[in-house]
Amino acid sequence: MAERETLLLANKLRLEYGGKVVADGLDLAIHRAEITAIIGPNGSGKSTLLKALARLLRPGAGSIKLRGKDLWSLSEKEVAQKIAFMPQSASIPPDLTVAEVLRMGRLPYRSFWRSWQAGDDVICQKVLQLTGLTAFAQRSMGALSGGERQRARLALALAQEPQILLLDEPTTYLDIRHQLELMAIVSSLHEKMGLTVVMVLHDLNQAVRYSQRLVAMKAGRILADGEVAEVFSCELVRRLYGVENEIKTVEVHGQRQQVFFPSAVMGV
Amino acid sequence: MELAVTPAHPRTRKRFWALAGGLLFLGAALLFSICQGAAVFSPLSAWQILSGGAGQENFTILYHIRLPRLITGALTGVNLALAGCILQGILRNPLADPGIIGVSAGAGLAAMAVMILLPNLASLVPMAAFSGALAAVALVFFLSWENGIHPLRMVLAGVAVAAFFGGAMTALMVFYSDRVQGTVNWMAGGFAARTWSHVYMVLPYTLLGLAGTFAGSCWLNALQMGEDTARSLGVRVERVRLYLLVLAALLAASAVSVAGMLGFVGLVVPHMVRLLTGADFDYLLPASALWGAALVVGADAAARVAFAPIEIPVGVFMSFLGAPFFLYLLRQGMQRGH
Image (cartoon, rainbow over all chains, first blue to last red; front, side):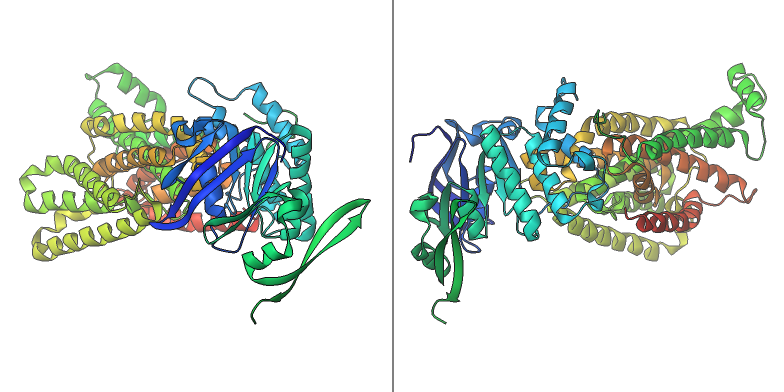
C-alpha cells in the first residue's frame, strides 16, 4: 500500500457497550483520501467501531488519535469540525425543511461570538448542489422520498465540512436506484475533494465496488484489513459469514468489476 | 437566517402570523383583562386611573387586584409554554409536559401538606409548592441518572415519582377529609387574589427562562435530531440536556407555585405553535412564549367574566375550551401531512 498520511489511528482498542466487551485489540489506521468499507456479520462490532471513531463511544481501553492527537483530548466541537458521522437511522422531525437540517450542520462552527454568516450560506448551497437537493431545500423532511431523505442526512454531515466522513450502513433501507445515487455522491466527493470516507456496509458488492480498502470484522476482531483486490476472496467471505460463494469478474464500460454471489449457507 | 438563493421557507407567512398573532392576541387579552370585570373601565380611563396614582378612585382595583393578577397569569403562561417546549424537544415526545419531570406531583403534595397540616401558614404555600416541585424533580433526576440524565429512564422515573406523591396526596385527603375544602381551589389552578408578591416570585424565572432558552435554542434543535446526530454535531449532549432540564424545572416549578395545578398550557401551547412554525426552535420558543402568555391571560379573563359573578377556575375553563380546539388543530395538521 502506498504511503499515505494517517488521519485516524486506533491502537489496541477495546470497545464496550452496556458493560459488555464488544470488540478488543483493534488496530486500525484510516488514511487520507481513502474510502474504507467495514464489513462483517451482524454483531461483529463494526458499527460500534464506527461510533468509537466518531467519538460517540469512549473506548474501554486503547486510544484513537486524530492526526496524532488523542480524540478525547479534543473538544466536541473540534472533532465535529473534522469528523462527521451519519448514523444508521435518525428520526429527523418531519416538519423540518432540508435547509433547516443543513443549517444545523454549521453548528460546530457556531459560538457565542460567531453566529450565522454569509460563508455558512455558501457552504450550504454547495452541499445542496453536491447532493442534488437544491430544488428540495424548502421541502420538509416528511415530504421527501426515502432516498431524498437519506441524501439530506448526508448533506447534514457534509455541511460540517468534515475531513473524514463516517457512514453507518448508508444504503440499508434504500431501493437500488437510491443506493446507486447515494454511493455515486460519496465517490464523487472522494474524487473531487479528496474526502476520507469510512463506511459500514452490508452489501459486499457495494463495498468492493466503491471502496479502496476493506476491513473485515468478526466477533469483535479484525480478520482482514487491506486493499480490496488483495483482501476480498471467497475464503474471506466463508470465514466471515459461513456462506459458500462465487466471485466473478465482469466488464462494465471497459472497467473490470468483481461481483460476488452467495450460493449456499455452509454446513446446512 | 434563511438560505439566500433558494425560494422562501414554506412557513414564512405562518411563522409571521404565529409571532404577530401571538403578540396581538396577548395585547388584546391584557387590555380585555384590565378593563373587564365586576367594574368595567374603558382602556382610556383605565390608563388615566393607573397613571394618576394612588389617590384615584378605583386605583386599588386596577393596580392592586387586576394588574398583578394578569401579570402573574402572563408570566405563568410564558413559563409553562417554554418548559413544555424544552421537554418535548429533549424527550422527543409530543406528549411531554411539565408534569412528566415530577413538577406537578411535588408541588401538589407540598402545597397540600401546608394547606392541610399547617393552615395558619397559608402564605407559605407558593414557597412550599416551589420547593416541593424542585425536590420531586431532583428525585426524578437522581433516579434517571446514568452518565447524565437518560431521557427514557426520566419518563419512567417521572411516572413513578408522580404515582408515589399522588398516593401521599390521596392519603392526606382521606385522613383530613374535613380540611380538603380549602385545597380544592389551589389544585384546580387559578389566579384569584394574586398580588405583586406573586409577580416577583415568578418574574426572575421568566427572565431567566427567556434568556436561557433563546441561548439554548440551537442545542434544542440539535437534540431533536437524535442523540448520536447531536453529539456528532459537537453538542455536549449530557451537559446541555442537564442545563435545559434544570431550566425547564425552574420554569415549571415557579409557574406552579403561583398558579397551582394549571395543566394543559405546557402540553398544548408548544403543539399548537409547532403546527404553525414547524420544528425550528428559533421560532418555536418565542412564539410559544407569546401564545402561552396570551392563552393564560385570555382564559383567566374569560373565566372571570363569562359567568360573572361566578368565577370558573381558569384551569377548568382552559381544558374545556382548549382540548377540543387542540384536537381540531391536530386533525388539520394531520390532513396536511405534518
